[in-house]
Image (cartoon, rainbow, N blue to C red):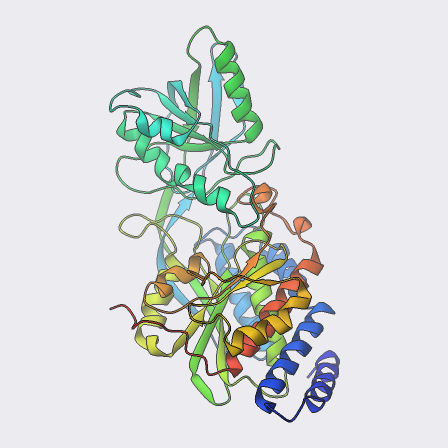
Length: 475
């Protein structure tokens, strides 16, 4: 045990000894949670994990050598730091490569546009493709266009993404990226552009997954300033604006990705598992610091604090570094390959022992709210959690958690309940899926606040006997 861990254990013993004898179990659990919280605020180690991942491996596209190397490094790190049952669980993957990309206005107002291909998009014909720009201010305007009205044209959607603390602006516009190319193709378009799903005004573009399958067309996101530039040009042009698109994007030979799994095994109810984590893969543009090395680091650092305790938790805590969260896959599964693999290969065979699940995948902003599964309002667990979390600036969300993050979705669909520690994502979509997703955008103190909340809450859940399941698991 390290010197810091020894000091932590001494402080923890003192805090538990000072707890009232009445309701000793609850008092001890709360005292330990408070000690975990305070220890994390002194320096949780999460920033160092992000630094190692992003510095050693840089961008980690799903199925790439960098993602595999990061997974092997992660498994070694977990073993070296006392985690139990560490393993790298591989699964097949269709790997996508961005290739080269270019979009430009030709003819009148000739100039290049700053773009990036959407993940999973197809290539243009060799030499590119040209078409008149059919500009729509909103996605609904595109949907209202009749069949055949875009024949030979490039559909362009300029709808903006509103800034919101909880990310609901992105939630309202992400359908444009995923469904837009297909809808444009159905109306005869030969290409598709959308204003990047970002909340900034800088000249870089946001990538992200689009739908994969027959009937798709080359698709790109353009930077916000270039979207505004295209609108101005269209207003001034006496003739239709002509666009030339070029892309060599493609799916490569079949490959694989992997989930990295480690545990802090429970002392009494080891068969009961609480699952948390983040996703290890990233887009190729930045180094995947906020999306999602931060989430991997936050949840892993929280479990490391618990692993350093003199006594393990009552229930088992499991961290998963999910692979291949970002990239689309050919039908029938469109994405979340690592999450789907975990749900089917790990969760389904042992579904009754999956207590609850959650993920950190919303950047590195501070946590501001807690939502638990249905039925937990005014429960002893909820009261204890808010007693410990309130000093961190976290409020209670009375709406039950409907999910715990993208990678939890397939497991939640099987009937496993979720909880959510909501992060402030006001500026998350300034850098999400861009070249600016780098560690320089992370405040280490915010990471420590996240780890403090995760470690404290996980200890309380693990020590409780709460049964969050309201209905029988889905077949």
